[in-house]
Length: 384
Image (cartoon, rainbow, N blue to C red):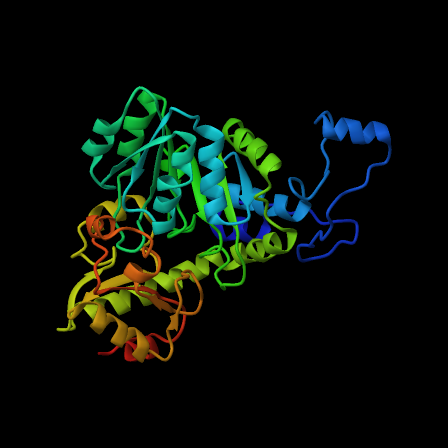
């Protein structure tokens, strides 16, 4: 039986076919055959297990779902085409018109845009609160509140909420607590073990780890995932077999990569903190971070995201970004390759000025996703 994380990450979730292949196979087919009309009827009605159509059943996708569920400590998992598809499917399946969501205002910019535009069309109300302020979460609860939606740590500043304490607010009120765990992955944090009901991933990030494809996932108990799966089966935000195969293989090396990301990020953050041109460094591994002690209690590491504010605002930030030669100027994160971006004009560019300032996304803020290159080369590349 697999007990340790690395063994589970490599060995769980896949059954070899009759060909006895050693590595996971890709089932690149749109549909699956049945031995008879009777068997087709039985599988369609769920009286008998089996594959039907790749929009909602595929062995490669199922292997990824099983492995990720094992690593997250969840009963089951639904894979989706992207992290945003996972968030959207979760909300649409679990929240009805005239119901209410409490969400962290410290989330990824596109998540905020989703809530403010598309979700709003369905007459679902949203109240925003500061991620770490438990009193705001408690005070925002209404009789029709159905979902707490957040990411911890947040992107890009690394704010953290006490998941266990937040679950003590949600559970007595029959509110589902959903945590986006993409920034840390199950190698560094397992929100379900801390009291969350739902975990959401952009597997595009650290789970793939190579910047190769889009993928997402929702994890929870069987009852909740059944509701989300029913929505996804009908609307089609499914993960392709090829992308599932990529992220499935990414899980093999997840723990090793996350340790290396953490080591490099800490060294970069420590160096940045000593530079006179830097106003402030945001990295949970630094004692100067407001949430450092809390992060230590519920995380196994501090992740690979380092953000910092330069003196001189947008002009200085753009100058630093444009001078880099190793860092890739891109808004993605979680790669083995280090990336650099200006959140105010990229990841959070669709927010209003007021919304950005409310979460401290200033014109001088730069976000680094620290990869696995040589640490001396990375530091030399961002010297001002």
